[in-house]
Image (tube, one colour):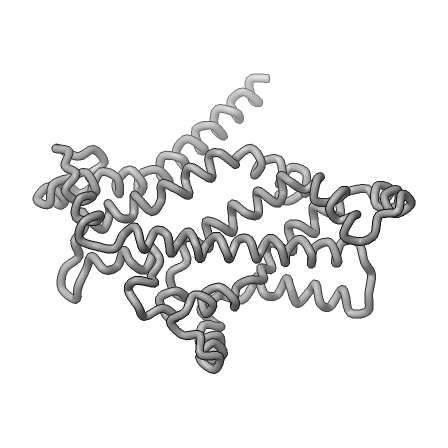
Length: 273
């Protein structure tokens, strides 16, 4: 009994230390955003600002098209997430419930897409959208990433946990394929869909490299690319940079906190460790 209790204490201590290490960069970012320009480098790690100033936030909101970047991020991340969920649900349903020629090699190909670093296909993708004339357009940012191997994989695993008897009972009652998908699978997979949506939303919201390569117009930039505007070749303006980063994190943080219980439920039921 004492050994189990000691083990539990060690696990909790490790988790606490890990949580603190994860929080330190976030607290440092917020602290710098609330500091004066001269106080940024007074200490090695400024967790709590010596004096509170909103000058960085004022500079971000008044001297840059921050709200334009914000709405661009909402539009791009929203379209990408909606498309990835839609295609992910349809593909996962097909892989989970239909057996067709080439389904296994095709699903293996989907898994392989998760193993390829995005930077490895950056140049070929750019050549494709350049041929379509989509450089410096929103469709050039959105269309190449509408399909997500991760979304297909997770939703397929969840659909496999749903008893086939429910599928067969729905078909006996006269439901066709899309009706079965809606009444049986989608209603049961709400936690998984929200979980995948949260993960993909955060990933799409934070995407930097692809947006940087495709978009040239500053009015079309998203927040991760726009934040870089607060530096030049010789100087990084740390206070407004951290203020913009803090503002860009808040919407995703709120959405994640509101949907956290669905995230836990989906991973418990899907069997993913």
